[in-house]
Image (cartoon, rainbow, N blue to C red; front, side):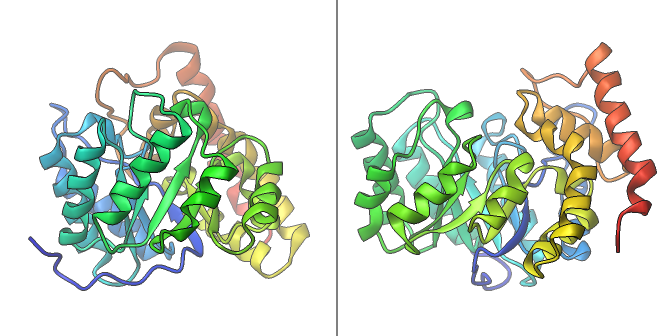
Length: 307
């Protein structure tokens, strides 16, 4: 199967929301609602869509559901912006299969994660990435998130992977801004860097990241784009004002319940549903009240941000 449109080349610059997957009341994938969420973000002016990542609940979906969600995103983008497909599987063989499927469906690129559950050695991690890269001609962004996936893509591993032409970018989600400088010092311009934690986006973009893969953009795309534009323009006072306003929400992206919190924000902002698939459950009790208050305060104060 091929995508309806030719995939748009990706320069990995800008704001790339990590898009949610929407479910109906029976927790089946709701493709019309998922497509509506995707199209709304495209219309808001984001620079690309990342589907089937952590926020997209990749590992809660069957292979058939993953293909359907990706197909919807390619249709929603309609050649206007690139679509990046998450590759998050239990085995290297399954990751290779889905990488091939994603290319056939019209993805512009891949976001490749370590194999799930198993914690690899550096050599095993490198072999996994090489196998997926060899299965496709699509450009690949590796995803480094040690807190979530219990493994680090070490600088030495990146140096060894430098000979793989289609591994071109790195989404960096280490909760330490020093890593951006270490990466550039070690690898120069070999890899395009993207900030992967919302509450380190400012620091990452200032320190050399070209793009931002964002969770809270799902609920607040206008403000995310304004932050990125201010930094690109060198308007640090405006960027700091937006970032300080945004930070209470951006911290949600670094929590264990980030998917539930981001979907709740979508729901409150009238952009999607808060439904998640088990073992996740929608927020409850004190946590629900806490996150709701943060979102409502942001919604009430957003108009006061500098234009």
